Image (cartoon, rainbow, N blue to C red; front, side, top):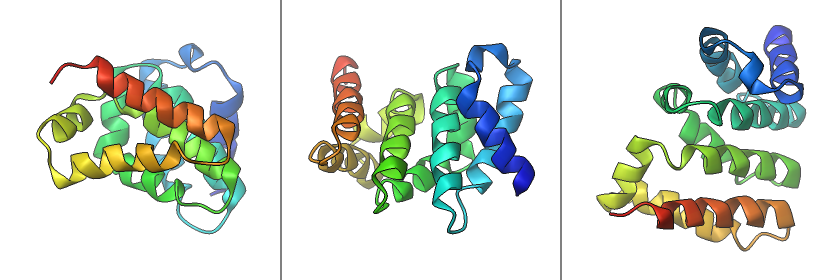
Length: 146
């Protein structure tokens, strides 16, 4: 757990482009595992690190999704802690253009509807940065034709 938390701190403070593709991919599971438990600092830092990693490539985004990252981040969006909520929203914003998410939304599945709904709810947050992330995710979705 301590190693995963240290990895999260590295992922937050290091330009993600400095990681090799393999190293970035290897970080995904420990960062997602760090979201289990009650440590809000660990939740915050792992979500921020995943936000950074998700900016790298579709392959990293798919790795996050394959390892149930969307649902874990979605859960953190309901946190009472605005920093955790903001970091999780940022990560989801970076994942929203991943093919499985776009397909779920385009096909009108229940999951796809929930994906859009969460950004609509988060766009009403009192935290300005959370609103920006949510609005950005919705704008990204609008840019993709059905």
